[in-house]
Each structure stands twice: as C-alpha cells, then as structure tokens.
Image (cartoon, rainbow, N blue to C red; front, side):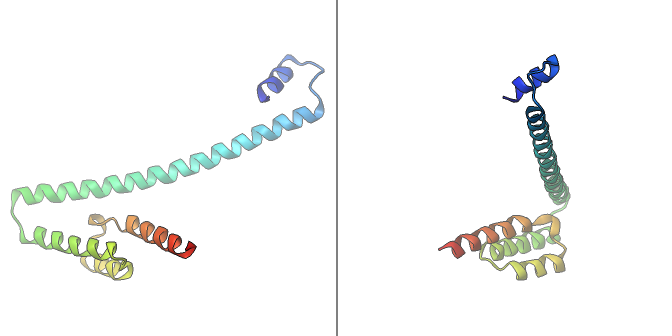
Length: 128
C-alpha cells in the first residue's frame, strides 16, 4: 500500500489526495521511529557484547598466567568463583555481590546474568 502511494507521489499524478500524502508521511515517520528504537536496542546489545568479550579476554589472560606458573592465587580465585556462582544459583544475590566486590572478581563472574535470571524467576512466581 505504501509502495503505491510512493509511486503516485513520484509520478506527480493528481490521484494522490492530501489525506493519502499525510498517511504516507505518518507511515514514514512511524518507520523512522521504529528504526531509531532498533538502533538504540542494537547499541545496547553491542555494548553488552563488548563487556562480555572484555570479561572473556580477562579470563583468558588469567588462564595464560596460570599456564606459566601453577599459582595458589589462581586456585583461590577459582574456588571463590565456584562459591559465588553457587550462591548466585541459590538466589543469594546481595551476598554474592558483596563477595564479588570484596574479592575484586567482577570480571570473573556473570552477575548480570544471574540478576536477570532472579528477576525472571520472581516474576514467574508472582504470576502464580
């Protein structure tokens, strides 16, 4: 339908009424708004993806260091990560956040994922 209106406007025919032209303008404005919203959503997703990639790079660098020297610090971090991830799976979000901050393990844990999971679980429970 929009294509036929565009063709009519492009041909310059008298068939295109004022109302049809307004309708075409409204449709193009609506399409523009959708594109802007999609661009913003895309930007948010790419920012999140960049953050996840940085976290993975940090983890890989950490593993490369461990390959060189079997370090007690590596094993301590690993144990704390396992404990924190267990706590997150069990729903102890606030306590996990405190441990993550105290131990400086932000780049080694996926706290945002567990927060989102917790939000979804609570939302589903509230609907029952």
